[in-house]
Each structure stands twice: as structure tokens, then as C-alpha cells.
Image (cartoon, rainbow, N blue to C red; front, side, top):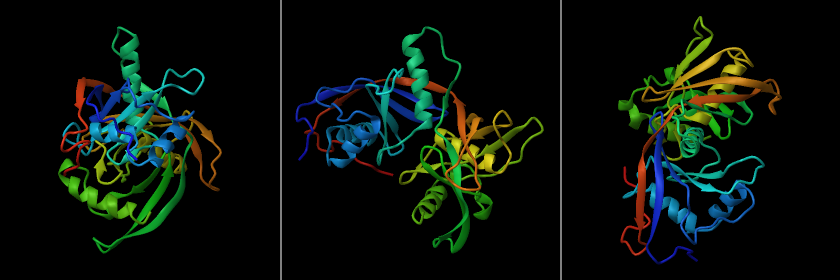
Length: 306
């Protein structure tokens, strides 16, 4: 049964980008688009459990063409359930609702300050959940390349697979987008990407990586939770620690995030370390949007095209 309202309605949003990666913020849900559940996770699961849930239809109409695109990301602002929190958020992309979004968190920090203060924020940073490497040097076969590669798995709010691109012979350039999509799908199917670097004399590890997520999406930014996954790998290698060393992390278009270890924590994986990461990044306002939604529209709620 569909819960989509038949009447046309308007939806307002603010579009931001964090280091080039888009984030569409819907601060006020339209009438009839309430969420069910006490926590963000309960609300997220309730939406996912109901085909054509009104909020999933709204997600698709904002994320898919003609009002969005296949690489759009965004979030719905909802009431907080944590003491001291100003708001909670349901993160979404073209394939559904995600568990975490670092670049979106950064954009939301800038958005919240811009809404409540007159001066321009310099940067935003967030403290991530405990992050740790839980498998290393796993062998993954890529049939399309007739090649076996080594993969590290990391938890940092989501599961990330890290691949040393020297195994593939790819360089991190926008021109290699299609190759990265093919590689990411090949790695994700049996079980994202990374390029290693050396620590400089000033104690900063400088790396450039490309992050693949969902089905064919490549993050323009270095990815917030992906940056946390890199920090967890560097921790396991002894290259950073609490109060020791930092990571300057650049994405496919060259924009940076900075990250360091706030504290080291017990890991659920024997022999490997966990940490609480801190990530700093910049976000900028793109524009204020007002979308007209008409469920009788031929292509409503939208379509994907690559």
C-alpha cells in the first residue's frame, strides 16, 4: 500500500557541498511526512521496511532526476532523541538511507551555525564512533581483470574496504571514474579504495584516496567516515596515535579533510587497535531550493540515468 499523498505540494531545501560533495538539507518535512520511532535507527528501519513509504518516495523525488542526480546526497532533519542534541538527521542517497555520513555531518555543522549566528564559520569538525581495522590482507578476485588483490576491511560508522591502487595500476584522477566504478563493484560484490603515502617530517600523513559507495557512486570529497577508516588503518600500522600524528586526506577532486586520533579504545578484534577519530572539513552553501512535487507527474518520483 502506498502512503504517498496524491495532492501536489512544495518542499524547501538548502543545498550545500562539503569539499565538492553535495548535501541537500530538508529542515522541514511537508505535512503528512512524519517519521515513526523513538531513535534515528528505528525511524530508518521503519522507512526501509515499508515499500513506497512516504519518506522514501520523498527521498527519491529529491535525489533522482529531474530534481536531483545519481550522485546526490542529503538528509531530513528530525526531532532529537539524545539529551543536548539540537536535531537528528536521516541521511540518504540514491539507493536508500545510510547509517552515517561524515561529509553530511560537516555540512550540517556549517548549516546549524549559519542559522544561529551572524559570523561565517571557519570549519566544522566531528567526533566519530570508535573506528578499527577488523581484517587485513583479504584476497579478493576480480574476474573482469583476471586479478587477485589484497583488501583491508575497516569499521568507521560503516564498513570500508581499502585497496592499494598499486595492485591495479590506476591513478586517482577524475578521468578514471568509470574504472573506479567497475573496480568498486568488483570489490563490493564478494565482500572503496585507497592509496598509501609516507609520513612527512612534520608528523602529518598525506594521502589521496577515492571512496566508492552504494552502487556506482564516487564521493567527490575525501568522505568523512572514509577518512575515519583510513585513520584506523594508520593506527593499526603505528603511524598515528592519540595526540600523535595527523592525516591530511584528499579526495578524487583534490579537496582535503584533516583527521587525528582523539583517544585509543579497546577493539573487538584481537590484535588490532580502535580509536575515536576527529575529522575537520569545510562546507559551503550552494543555494536555497523550492521544489514542486506532483505525484501525477509522468516521471514522479524520479528516475536514475548514467
